[in-house]
Amino acid sequence: YDNASQDRNCRGHSSKQARRTRLLVFIKIILKCLDYEDPSIQFEAKQIIRECTRKNREGIPGYDPLADAITSQLRMTVGEL
Image (cartoon, rainbow, N blue to C red):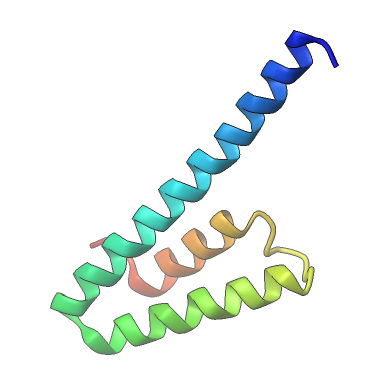
């Protein structure tokens, strides 16, 4: 390992962590808005998140990266708030 490759690894890790953090913030905001606006759609959104996560873990095509799968499925179901 040289310093340059260590820096790339650190940046790659922080980038992945940043994407994960953005996804979690997005999910939290969506669920909070739906709690106020429409609890039935909030329940459906939670099911979508669980289903996407399960399919991602099973390696089903179209569910990797998980953030993209969850975001696109939620946008189709919830629309723009």
